[in-house]
Image (cartoon, rainbow, N blue to C red; front, top):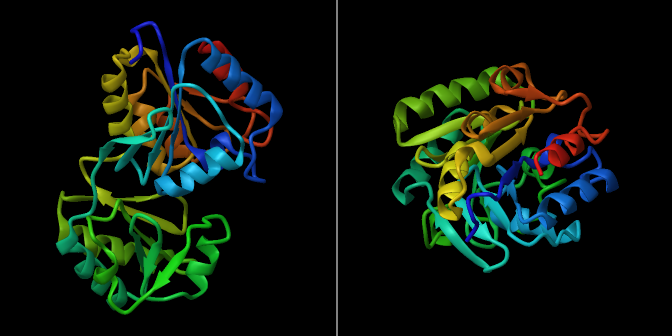
Length: 272
């Protein structure tokens, strides 16, 4: 456990901590090492599932003591040091087939996840686009429920060409699920579907509480709509200059440089 003098920094991945080439530059990496060497905590807080966050963490050869991975917009919190989940929730199983059925009615691609795979009814253009970056293996099946032994961490709806169609689906889905689920765009094409008690902002509160870190010692950086809750929840919320206008409005500060030019390095060093 942390003492109340330590700090924790939450990072979105794409467009924030990672460059356009999906790497962390040497300058930013060095800043992170100094931050964690000082006894502070590093946390990836992403819309990606935990297995994908783990793949990024190990693929970038990160090895920071006191690291956490928070996946699927706050539905999973994993301690790297302890190799265990400290929190886990999911989309209620009874809602999964209803959401899939509604997505087919609106002709919007929708898939979900089990512990090891993406689970989808189809493997078309949207899935191919998604898996350019997300390397999680795929199961294509007519019976999605057969592949789920527990509530999935999240679902995702993808529409690459017609945002109005995606919006119509979102409104119909919101009407169907009410306040049980949160529906948020993580980029212009991806709509994240996850339990309302989760969200990236809930991670800031849960993990700070778990570690005994006061909220004023929490930092969070992001660039997209699904980052707003954590930016608002943190003691210091940082918007990337390459982020959306909504994100910038919700932040305490905005970086001077984008994710391809070490925009976060100075903020990480200043947080030590």
